[in-house]
Amino acid sequence: MIKLVVTFAGKFKAMKPTHIEHIGIAVKSLQESIPYYEDILGLKCYAIEEVADQKVKTAFFMVGQTKIELLESTDPEGPIGKFVEKKGPGVHHIAFAVEDVQQMLDHAAEKGVQLIDKTPRKGAEGLEIAFLHPKSTQGVLTEFCQHPKE
Amino acid sequence: MIKLVVTFAGKFKAMKPTHIEHIGIAVKSLQESIPYYEDILGLKCYAIEEVADQKVKTAFFMVGQTKIELLESTDPEGPIGKFVEKKGPGVHHIAFAVEDVQQMLDHAAEKGVQLIDKTPRKGAEGLEIAFLHPKSTQGVLTEFCQHPKE
Image 1: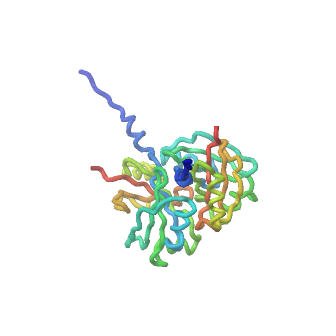
Image 2: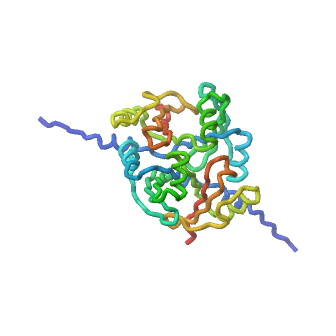
Image 3: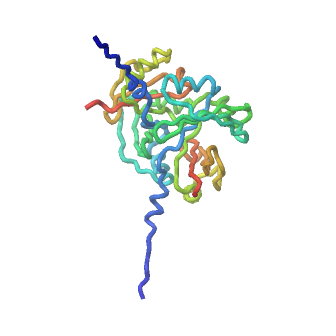
């Protein structure tokens, strides 16, 4: 009898992010910030979206593989409102595109990382997303993003 | 007599960044931070470099088109030392890959942006680099990078 042993070397490959999906940047005002990204940097705002449960309005720009996601708070008590109040406008989070958010979360939790989301939830543009806590990520609020499986 | 009129539509195309060249992240210690990027995110540190005039040690990881550049200060009075003292570890700057740094700088200056560097200088990995002042860039310290022309 022959036993077939398969080692899933592919598993480890899949766990590496493929690219930076987006950089989330907290701003005071989309109206003031969009002209900087368009007129100075030469990028094009291709979408503006309100995410009511996060209390933000967002504006998107594409640069290579990566989106710039500007975030304006619609409520001083929302997460972006508090961030801008405390730290001023600036980079709020980095989102890595991954093939399997749940696998990344489980791996991070096993290694002792504090999770904000234990399972993926729906984010902007229909992506499956989850956040790691910046206390566990060397100060950078970190998001995983995955395109929903067909 | 025929006059040939050429309009440089290409100029405006060249002025748009092609991708995010790197994200600079201030950390307290490379020794503590590298294991997070390698063991949790699955990225591979491919270079460690000391940049004496910036008073930093840097560690590089590639993710898609973009590098993660970790920055540890070698001097509390250096720019990264002061940043970490004031704001804690976190994203320090974003670098856009462009075809012509000088052209981007001239354009930004014309539009009233405050420049840190009026002409490009040599950065890590032999790139031509220049910084815009975060006061003029909606709170995000912004760098332009260009591969030196052959």
